[in-house]
Image 1 (cartoon, rainbow, N blue to C red):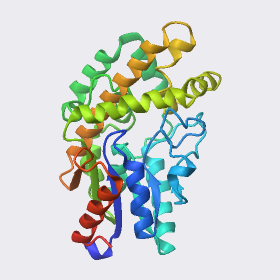
Image 2 (image 1 turned 90 degrees about the vertical axis):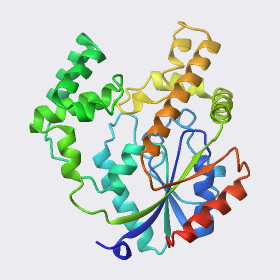
Image 3 (image 1 turned 60 degrees about the vertical axis):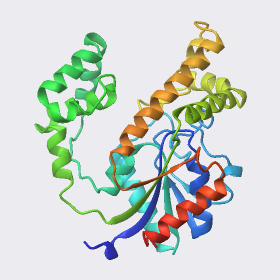
Image 4 (image 1 turned 180 degrees about the horizontal axis):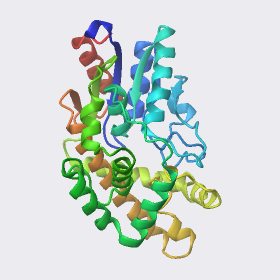
Length: 316
């Protein structure tokens, strides 16, 4: 499939609190486009503050897709995102609009853009439940060591505490007899139907980004994060929604196990660590055009630079 036959897309990537949403909205306005989110947490209803979900004012009338559309009790998957995103892109492009993807869940974006094909694992509930029980009994390190023995290539790319992906890799091997490394290699055999231009946001000075993260956490608490976490306690969230940064850090305060300041500092630290993981993921992609928010702090200037990149790359 040649580039001319592929659907052109723009993806705004980068760490949390870097201003991705604001840039995506400006690009959509400039290009007569719509925004498609690849954020695994902004999908969920009722988690507006914790996930920094864009407000109607921030959206500025630009249609946003895959935001605030899934019940927290549901477990959303990469495969489901691929299916949903493909239908949405086809609809947007079919109406003569441009599609701007934005978010921080690199796994969702890569699986979609690269057209990764996954083996059907069938009904995996029993295997998943047993592996989770073994995780509780043996701990994350033991499960990671098990994966390391089965599939060292894939395991070495994971943090040992990333239990979701560790368990998923073990589950896939049990159900299919194939390692994730094999699956990934096999999944890239079909060409992508998309020609994506990546715009990345980062900061040359790491402390600049960390200060933005700290300010965001303070705003989240002021904007009702505790009330949101309290409501979350009463629900029965699915395994994906339960991972949301911003909710779990506040629970010790609500349960009387820690003071608010301690919980806020924990949330700031967890968010900084998350930002590091996001940057590690996106920096593996040599096609990203990086822009630095501490060198270009004005949104209008940042938008102009991004549009220049799209023009030079002849995206549309």
